[in-house]
Length: 106
DNA sequence: AACCTGACTTCGG
DNA sequence: TCCGAAGCCAGGT
Image 1: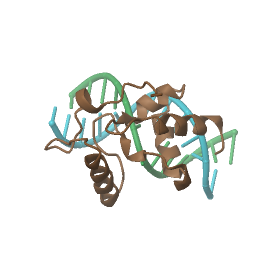
Image 2: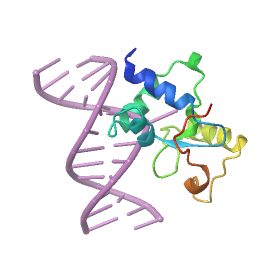
Image 3: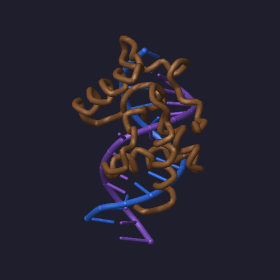
Image 4: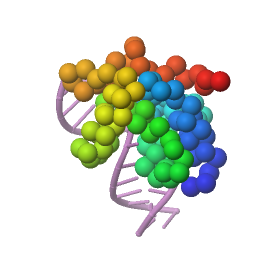
């Protein structure tokens, strides 16, 4: 749990700017493990609320929400929409517009 | 240590 | 475009 890997993932996700989204794979790469996309999802699933992580800005490579439950997907959709991220008719995000470039701000 | 599971990704049909 | 199989990682049993 308290591994450096997790901390790194949390660090990275915390850097995703408002109005942008990132994929699990992208985060895995930035964390130093290009093929640990699934582990990233795991980390998020186990992430403590007190971290105040913008988990909703993390979506699958297909541009859709990967949450297992309908309610969760709706919430994520709503949160992103409130930040200005638009979804197309198929419920997918336009990466050309909203994909995070991976650069930390500040 | 082996096996299963999951907020993933990629490739082929 | 959609579906299924295979590959990868960390955790839990």
